[in-house]
Length: 415
Image (cartoon, rainbow, N blue to C red; front, side, top):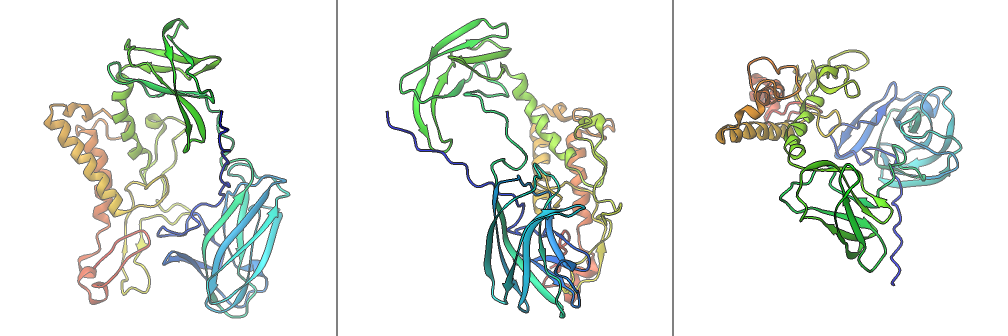
């Protein structure tokens, strides 16, 4: 038998958003006295002059995991308006601020790549108190330092901790439709078929057969066999598939779980609402949280977002509400508009096929579930009201200074 190629894990990336492709540098932060922004895909920070120590002007990212005794490589691109030393390194983000490693580089007006490798003497597993930071202070004159492609790779434990062990027999954990194709896979280096057994919740064998060897799956880095049990169609829960001593997780055969997906997927929107508490009575205690971006310290909120500086605009807008995007705190008109259309289109389609009650009042776990309005429309309205708030004032849209370009980092565009 030909040996399978070794499947090596990629280096674990510890930095989030180091390419600065979004409108803000989040989750990178600026220290006291500095002001940062994303400009053409770089994180540029205005550094005041007259500071004494390099650490008097800082930028960085918190919650970076480190493991004691493991090797890490920090890489970043940097340039500055005027040449100056910049120290990059890692350490503890809270008192007593213990340092793991730091190295100073000479940054010039030309963008260069800097890198160094170190071994951590501290242990900050998961999203702990580890930190990567850059020291920009200690200069007599003010300066602007721009960073890009910040990366920290290394360690043996994935960020977020070790994943659960992967079962050798892998099944559809949502459900299998009784009358549809039913396939599973099993990891095995055997080149000949293996016997599989389907058992019901009581552990009784109800079907069996032979696997089909498929060889090495390059994407998974595993040698796999396919199990096809499409001929078995009895609905039920608690089924398991066994190949030798390997047993799958329990699964169902039926349509109820499949049908519930459409409502389960809609829960995303309420969970990601901005400007409103996410209440336990709708999402459970695990996912409940206070309202975000409502102007409660230390967050300034979204109730008075100023127009982007140096664009000829001077107004501010109340742009609270709406949905957060992709699990972060960005809120975007384009993404939100597409999502609103999808919800409204779903409502129209269900109504056209006589199934409007599927998303009627009380069908979703949201605060508006008893207001006499279909819940699908209630959820769409939450984003529509945000989109209306994002409109630039009429006077600003017609003003000469705003006819070419006027944006905020999270807000309106007037053209």
